[in-house]
Image (cartoon, rainbow, N blue to C red):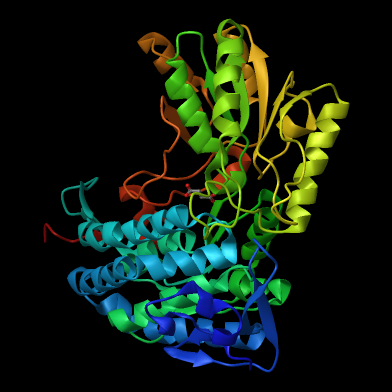
Length: 495
Ligand code: SIN
């Protein structure tokens, strides 16, 4: 196997080069395979790492390791698990800079944003380390004097997961931290575009003292074969996925054969609504962060901007000036605020959505084409005159394009915002308290940002309704997906 240090990673100036790993991490050891997958930097197409290509056999080994470790891990006290998770959190934060650089080089987001993702991911580990201590049961009055009803909560068992390339650290941390805190063991197959962050997390989990078999990472390009093991293996009790709705549907159906508990964080089509009474500067700021974070490649990114006609001109002018000031380039370069998209195919998809919407009558205000920075760069783009039935409004864009749709009144915009099969995140700006309650309650979404463009954090329940998925990640509710409720009926008490 080629030495990864020869592939351009030396330019990263890592303080701890041991964070770069080439192998899957199974049962506490690093597994090599004959073939390799190549990781490339989306900013320039350079090869940055060669990783052993694991497959079905290694995935089965990882499930077995997780199964074998389950008894030992679930028997530990919540305090013991919390202390190991706390070590892991500390190590992630100590290596935030290195982990951020690794993330930028494989995923593309600007370094400051990548370091922000490391802190975001680590925050879930810290949060669940604490929350795991509060898995309370219940005592329920019985239906007759001789009975007592007691409820206890127990770990579901082995958890398998598939995680996406857009948050190579945080989407693993958000799932693994909750699973491990609940007493479950964990196997993850990270996206093949971004395995380095996952493997660096495994290295730090080992240093944190998390026992062999509790946290396993299998990297490989046999998505179908590995996916089948993770969704159909009888020893996997729960499956969790973050990714697109079509893939999520397939995975849910595969989980049916063994009736697994599932949680799904799927696609979105987030409306961002600006009412006449909004603070327009705040709305522009909120639209910027909710749209252009990660070059528009998040499930909660604003997908449609609805602006009430009275402030349409003012909002569009200020928003266009802010978007035009974004600086596009390699995420490792100073001052860059928007990096590449993940691949040239992703750029083609966005470009087609823009072209089709222009053909359907939208107007181009800014951008609208590939950027000269490289094959994977797309210019931050604004379209006006968009209607809710145009391709750019009906599809999850997953790129740096803002379609602006004008509206007249509150009832109309609630109906337009809800007119989608998705229901993940929504945002709106208003200063009228009556309207704030009406709109917040009327939006059919799992999360609503009110005068706020960044809603994700470890203390909040992240998740969607409709075809955006089920289950919640983060917050006190995030543990529920990794716990089973067991009811104990104690009888014969009056004898
Ligand atoms: C996602 O895009 O799937 C996650 C975004 C977030 O956690 O804010």
